[in-house]
Image (cartoon, rainbow, N blue to C red; front, side, top):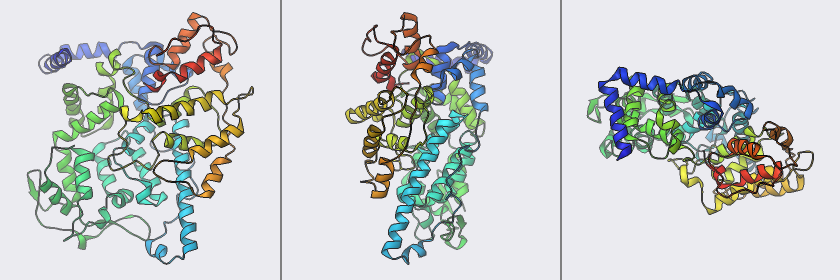
Length: 511
């Protein structure tokens, strides 16, 4: 009741006393952050950050920080793409004409390319100057879901990733139209098979339920009519490019959500975007991604109205979210569970780990339940508390132990232990055992992971082999955990042991 009352008061202030509301909002946005708020902000809007990045934001106020991260938009990836991305796809007719050995070699090539693609994206997350762009690319990957397992062509999955990154902080409507014609999506949701007289309803259903409106805002008849509008959207099997097939399009009258006309696919997408439920659906998902597991319905409506009025500019929605009192509220901190990607990438970024090959990390996040380019189903990874169970919590601790314990005095992993770990990480649930070539490759990866605990602890005045004093312990704790440790930590632990203990605390899994 108290939360509802606060929300209603906010809405009433905004409606009837806009000047007073603007003053209140402006004062809130101009509040200086300090180190703790800066660290929280960077982790929520990107991945956990190195201390030097935190200090760059600590002197800003909230509005300045929000504008800075939004201005760092990355339209493209800076990581050099795999060599095969520009190669033409193998047409289905060529696949059918292959003998068994050729088909086996082709499948093995696709597996290798899929590994390389995951490593390419993870490396981009680890090195990007715009963590928010990568977080949003990952968010849209889990919104506009498609999977390597069904699409098969790694080139098409790569192109889709570029599409999502290019639009990650752009316009949702434009991205929706682009994704709907994306060859990987047309294969994944059977859009390429949708033709006049035999409409396939898969895309029509998912675009309403998962991409725009959410359940309860459309009927089965709306899906049937929309499917007719999408007929004719296809791909050229020779090159994997989008192809319009007018002879396969149903040009009859359709009725979708109360609107009637000789609609094509773009017309129907515009009808969906015109529904108030669309903006609210997207803002609700963004709230669960960045603020808390339980969206405030009044705030969602307020932000969604701004989002829709802007013509679906994603930065408008994010700006409103990041400058909302709920985002900064103490009660909403440490309420979100780090996804496997956030856990691994954030740890490597925050502690300045060095590495020669990102590939083993892609298997680490897959083992924890987030296999890049391969979400479990059309609904994607459920996220939230579903990331943690008895099995994955142990696996998460295993990954962290490997990073923070398997280091020799020079700060390098023990390679024998690394080989054993990579062999285990190769057994990804849902994929079955990797092919022998893949297992050998990962088991023998010469991936020298380097962490310099002495330099990292020095930022807080602490040393590796000496117990930190009270002030140093508190500073290190705040840098690592969003809350107090779940279990009291001995005060006599040396610097490295104290750091490892913090990282192994369950609270480290939260943000």
